[in-house]
Image (cartoon, rainbow over all chains, first blue to last red; front, side):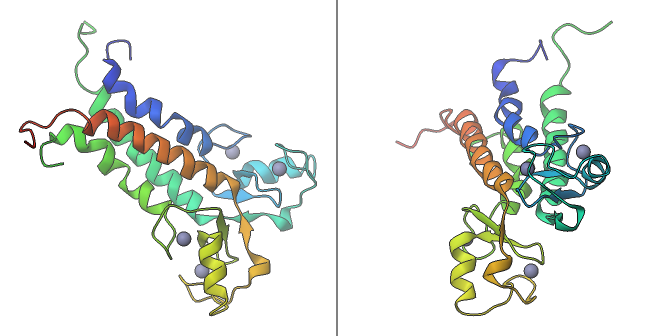
Length: 104
Length: 104
Ligand SMILES: [Zn+2]
Ligand SMILES: [Zn+2]
Ligand SMILES: [Zn+2]
Ligand SMILES: [Zn+2]
């Protein structure tokens, strides 16, 4: 990272917010089979179901929530897949160029 | 566009799918107050409500649909805002540099 010019870092900075939004507030990884609560918060299916076995409320806003109200939004799952692909493509283009001082 | 090198075009190509996914299947613009149907398809709030005044079914998959079942997903709205900002930032960085042959 430190060897890159400012211009080369731009795609990553510009997309940092999008990256953050596509992550699960429980595991901080990208949403995996995203499920939305009635209060409009999104989690991985497994993460929110595990949480519900402990407490029947939204981990983000504490609103009452139940497993039956969970709704999948396939669009979010597709966004995660395509954003990850774009991220990989961008990092290959911008970060795979040899650094100014080689490692050995 | 034609004056850009292949490397400079990469952010746009890599993010083309993300761009397409964030658009409304009715107006083809970015989702504006996104509403999801029970069948998990997403539209601008105004676009889908106008469509429902004509036909009570999903314009994408033809499943039965009603206005009462529509659900907003704020995360999608935030993704649209942040993706548009990133897009603008990227295009300023990559496409505002002077072309090889000037226009006049
Ligand atoms: Zn998770
Ligand atoms: Zn919530
Ligand atoms: Zn629309
Ligand atoms: Zn549908």
